[in-house]
Image (tube, rainbow, N blue to C red; front, side):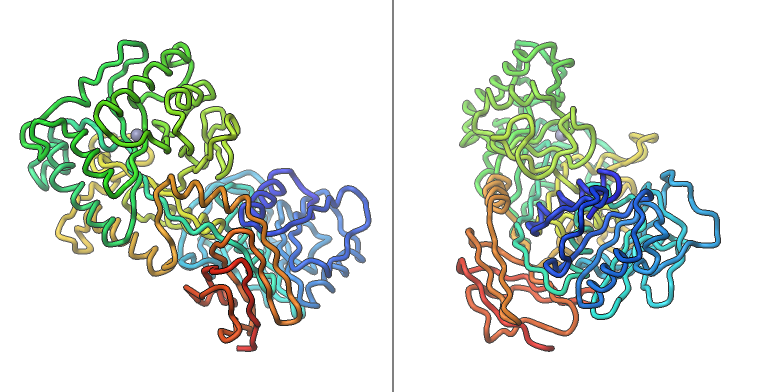
Length: 563
Ligand SMILES: [Zn+2]
C-alpha cells in the first residue's frame, strides 16, 4: 500500500517480483476502500508525508497485526498519524531536513545470514526518531539514530525503515528480508547460482615489472600471471568448486577504426610457459577446459557511438575479434559478454550481437547511468530483450564491509551472487593512482605475503571470502555465466503456487528448483512429513528459522510442528 513517492514503490515491487513473492498494489491516494487485510500474510506500507491515516485505518492495521499479520512500514518522512504503529516517536532534537548525507548503517540483527555486525556508510536521509520501549533496533547509525527497527503488536510483527536508503536498488534484498522477518511463513524459489567472472583475462599482459608484484616475486606482470596468479586462482576454483567465466580482451590499443590489428595478442614472450605460442592463446586454451571463455572486447574501449564514430567501426572491430577467436581455436563462440568499463550504448550492443550472435548474456553493473548500459536488473536487456542482463554486484579480492553487504543483499534477494575481479587488481595501489576514490588494492597488499593477519595477501583474502560464503551460504551452487543464464530465465518464468491447509504446506512448481522456507516464531518443518524435497541448510536468523531446500519433484509437501 503506497502513499508516497514512486521510488520506494517501484523498488518494493521489483524486489518482490525478483524474489518471486506474490504481491498486490493498493494506492492509498485513490480514496478507494481498502481491501480486506486478512487475505494477506504481509502488508508493506509506504507512508509518505502527505498521507494522513484516519483513526479507523490505524485500528484496521493494528488489528491485522495483532491477529498475526506482518507489517513492514517504510517511512519516507515522519507521519504522526501512524505513531501508534511505528513504535517510535519524534525526537526532541530538531529533525533532519530530509537532505541526504553520509551515514553509518550498523546492522545489529541477523536479518540475512552474515548481516549482523556489518557497518557500511551510505548517503541517505533519516528522520530523527526515538524508539519507544519494546522496539528493537535492526539498523542504527554510529551515534544510535534508529534507521530500522522491529516491534510486536499482539501476535504479529512490525518492521520499520526510517530511511530513503530503501529506494536504492541494492536495498531490494533488505526489502525481501524485512517481509520474511514479519510474515509468519515465507516460501519462495531461489536462483541458487554463484557467478565468479574474471575480466581482462586471457590478455596480452605487459612484460614489465610493477609494485607490489615486483617486490614480492621479482617477476614481470606477465610472468606473475603465468606462474603465480593463474595457478593460484585455478587452485581456489578447484577447492571451492567454482567454474569461472574468463572474459578475454584481445588488445589494449586505442584503435577505433580499421585496420584492427592483433599485435599485442600475438606477442610471444621468453620466460612464459607458453614458449613460442602467444601467452594469451596458451592461457585461453588452458582455462577453457574447465571454465567458460567469454568476451570482454576487441580492445578495452567502451562501445559508444561517440567514441567509435559510427556503428560500422564497432562491428568491424568485433568481427575482427571473432575471426581471431576462430583462428586461434578458442572453442565455441562466446555466450557471455562483459562490456569494457561496464559501459555500452544501444549501437554498441547491436555491434556485439551482429558479430557474435552467440552472445546471450550481458554482464555490466547494477547501478549507474542507464544510457551507458548500467542501472540494469537481472532480466531482459531493455535495448534487446533477447539478451539477458546479469549485472555484477561485487568485485575484487577483499571482503570489505561494503562488498559483504552487497553480496548478502543480492543473495537475500535472489539466492544469487554475481562477482568479478581482474588479474591486475593487485597493481591498483595508492602509489599508482594517488587521487583515485576506490582502489582495487587500497592497502598495497602483496599477493600472498606470509599469510598472517598482518601480511595477508590478496590470495588469502579472497580465499577467506570464499570460505565465508561457504559458511553462511553452503548451498550456493557456483556456475558458469552461460549456465546461470538458463537458470535465471527459468527462475523469472517459473510459476509457483503455495497452499496452506492449517499446518500442512503444499508447493506446486513448474520447474524443479531450490526454495527458501522462512518460519517465524516457534514452529519448524516436520522432517518426517517432507516429501519432494530435501533440506540442504537450516539456520537461525533474528527470530526465525531459515531453511534452504532442494526440490526433487514438482510438488513439495511438509507439515509444520511446534518446536
Ligand atoms: Zn576490463
